[in-house]
Image 1 (cartoon, one colour):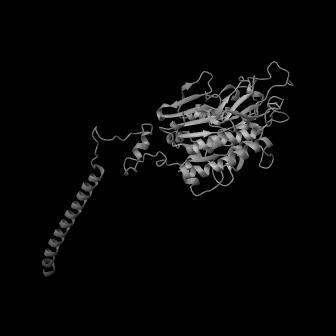
Image 2 (image 1 turned 90 degrees about the vertical axis):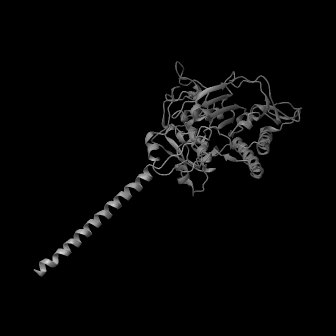
Image 3 (image 1 turned 90 degrees about the horizontal axis):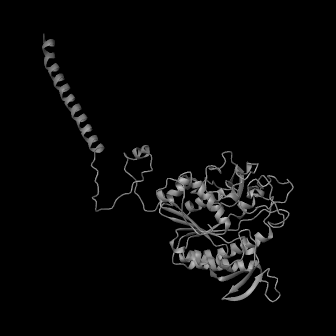
Length: 446
């Protein structure tokens, strides 16, 4: 009996303990639910109509927007580079290498575009349409020796170029490069032709959804020049070059540009009269015993010096890429003496050397650029050497050759002499890698 009676208060105490435990449990659950609801449904403050607005990029896919809704958003900068989650930076951040020393390696994936997907390829560079029978030349990519070079990403390029302007200033090689860039960007957005002069040498394209413009500025000498030749290169008089006066067609646009790619080129090899301070100083191949033969080297160096002096002294400071000379691959003659280029694969390093003419031009470029770079660094000018010479030297297979015209052998003897183009590049083709290099230089500048 005592044992039974003594159990009664013990059961009562257990019952009270259980009730208290359950109360605490329910209170804990209620607090957890309440606190989680505060996190999930925290208020969002919306600026009134008078305050600044945050522009939302509506091109983002819905799943990306949903994915970033839960964690706090990162701080947004006005600099488009800062917000790039770009693999270029992570792969090459710790790497220091020369992008322009390397090799062409097989690329089984081939180009990002074809002559059927891109509408801006001009006929002389449309090698596939013109009947070139081999296609191996599009299955290579440039690989720097000591670092990675990501392929050109049109979406990211347009993102960093939003609200910017880019101009290509130079000769027909610049036009070739612009065509390549437009083709690669067409994967994301088609360029809109917003301006061209009567002969389509000066042009401008817009990418409306990115507020980005690309300009082609025809200035083969960069300096003031009076030329007397037709589109086929047939001259009726000597070119007159004013080496100390720049071509205003590009200098007047300069202050409106954010990015500039500029280069001299092969036009300096043409016969010409050279003026300084409105005085005839000499010539190149003028065949006049009364005029001093100064040669193209003199003129090229002077023109580069005038150009780079303008860039380093300008109050406007765009990002400038100075492109080195683009070598040609004529064999057994020149463009007008039966030279041709019929190779179908790249050279390996050491299999070819730069010719004397291109070496003279390149040396002048490097020396003048080095002097300008030193001045520019003091004046706060962003200027980089876009050294495509040896990258291009290894690609004798990438030129149109006889396929600069539509089916050149149709109704002709297979042994007929047909003019070759061994200077410009097929599209798609090796010049597409210039865009890989260009984008990497822009990213690295960060």
